[in-house]
Length: 99
Image 1 (cartoon, one colour):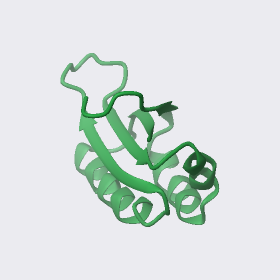
Image 2: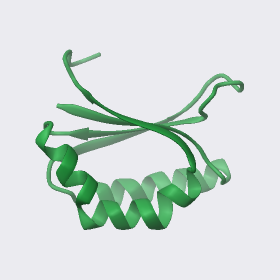
Image 3: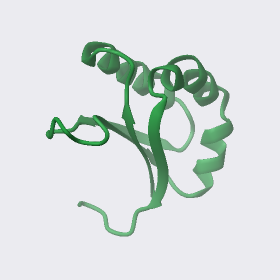
Protein backbone atom coordinates (compact mmCIF):
# COMPACT_ATOMS: atom_id res chain seq x y z
CA UNK A 1 0.00 0.00 0.00
CA UNK A 2 1.03 3.61 -0.61
CA UNK A 3 -0.16 6.68 1.27
CA UNK A 4 -0.26 9.90 -0.76
CA UNK A 5 0.00 12.54 1.97
CA UNK A 6 -0.78 16.21 1.50
CA UNK A 7 -0.28 18.84 4.17
CA UNK A 8 -1.84 22.13 3.18
CA UNK A 9 -3.20 25.52 4.07
CA UNK A 10 -6.27 26.80 2.25
CA UNK A 11 -7.46 30.12 0.93
CA UNK A 12 -10.96 29.17 2.08
CA UNK A 13 -13.12 28.82 5.17
CA UNK A 14 -13.11 25.53 7.10
CA UNK A 15 -16.58 24.80 5.71
CA UNK A 16 -15.36 25.30 2.13
CA UNK A 17 -12.41 23.00 2.83
CA UNK A 18 -14.76 20.29 4.13
CA UNK A 19 -16.92 20.62 1.01
CA UNK A 20 -13.79 20.29 -1.12
CA UNK A 21 -12.83 17.13 0.77
CA UNK A 22 -16.28 15.62 0.18
CA UNK A 23 -15.93 16.37 -3.53
CA UNK A 24 -12.44 14.84 -3.46
CA UNK A 25 -13.87 11.69 -1.90
CA UNK A 26 -16.63 11.37 -4.49
CA UNK A 27 -14.23 11.98 -7.41
CA UNK A 28 -10.96 10.35 -6.40
CA UNK A 29 -12.45 7.09 -5.08
CA UNK A 30 -13.62 6.40 -8.65
CA UNK A 31 -9.99 6.08 -9.82
CA UNK A 32 -8.81 2.45 -10.07
CA UNK A 33 -6.42 1.56 -7.26
CA UNK A 34 -7.56 4.35 -4.91
CA UNK A 35 -8.65 2.61 -1.71
CA UNK A 36 -9.63 5.43 0.61
CA UNK A 37 -9.28 9.03 1.66
CA UNK A 38 -8.71 10.54 5.13
CA UNK A 39 -8.78 14.17 6.21
CA UNK A 40 -7.90 16.03 9.37
CA UNK A 41 -7.25 19.43 10.87
CA UNK A 42 -4.29 20.38 13.07
CA UNK A 43 -4.99 20.60 16.78
CA UNK A 44 -2.35 23.25 17.33
CA UNK A 45 -3.37 26.72 16.13
CA UNK A 46 0.30 27.48 15.37
CA UNK A 47 0.91 24.42 13.17
CA UNK A 48 2.80 25.07 9.91
CA UNK A 49 0.01 23.33 7.97
CA UNK A 50 -3.61 23.47 9.06
CA UNK A 51 -4.96 20.50 7.08
CA UNK A 52 -3.95 16.94 6.25
CA UNK A 53 -5.31 14.82 3.40
CA UNK A 54 -4.27 11.23 2.76
CA UNK A 55 -5.18 9.11 -0.26
CA UNK A 56 -4.52 5.37 0.02
CA UNK A 57 -3.32 3.55 -3.10
CA UNK A 58 -3.33 -0.22 -3.60
CA UNK A 59 0.38 -0.16 -4.53
CA UNK A 60 3.24 1.84 -6.03
CA UNK A 61 1.97 1.21 -9.57
CA UNK A 62 -1.07 3.37 -8.80
CA UNK A 63 1.00 6.51 -8.11
CA UNK A 64 1.71 7.44 -11.74
CA UNK A 65 -1.69 6.26 -12.98
CA UNK A 66 -3.33 8.50 -10.35
CA UNK A 67 -1.20 11.54 -11.25
CA UNK A 68 -2.26 11.40 -14.89
CA UNK A 69 -5.82 10.12 -14.47
CA UNK A 70 -8.31 12.62 -15.98
CA UNK A 71 -10.50 12.64 -12.85
CA UNK A 72 -7.53 13.56 -10.65
CA UNK A 73 -6.11 16.11 -13.09
CA UNK A 74 -9.48 17.87 -13.44
CA UNK A 75 -10.19 17.91 -9.69
CA UNK A 76 -6.66 19.04 -8.80
CA UNK A 77 -6.55 21.82 -11.41
CA UNK A 78 -10.13 23.02 -10.97
CA UNK A 79 -10.66 22.70 -7.20
CA UNK A 80 -7.72 21.64 -5.04
CA UNK A 81 -4.70 23.57 -6.33
CA UNK A 82 -6.47 26.97 -6.51
CA UNK A 83 -7.64 26.48 -2.90
CA UNK A 84 -4.44 24.94 -1.50
CA UNK A 85 -1.54 26.87 -3.00
CA UNK A 86 0.57 26.30 0.13
CA UNK A 87 1.05 22.53 0.25
CA UNK A 88 3.52 19.71 0.73
CA UNK A 89 2.92 16.35 -0.98
CA UNK A 90 4.81 13.08 -0.59
CA UNK A 91 4.07 9.41 -1.35
CA UNK A 92 5.02 6.82 1.27
CA UNK A 93 5.32 3.06 0.93
CA UNK A 94 3.42 1.65 3.93
CA UNK A 95 5.63 -0.74 5.91
CA UNK A 96 3.41 -1.33 8.97
CA UNK A 97 -0.35 -1.70 8.78
CA UNK A 98 -2.74 -0.79 11.56
CA UNK A 99 -0.81 2.18 12.87
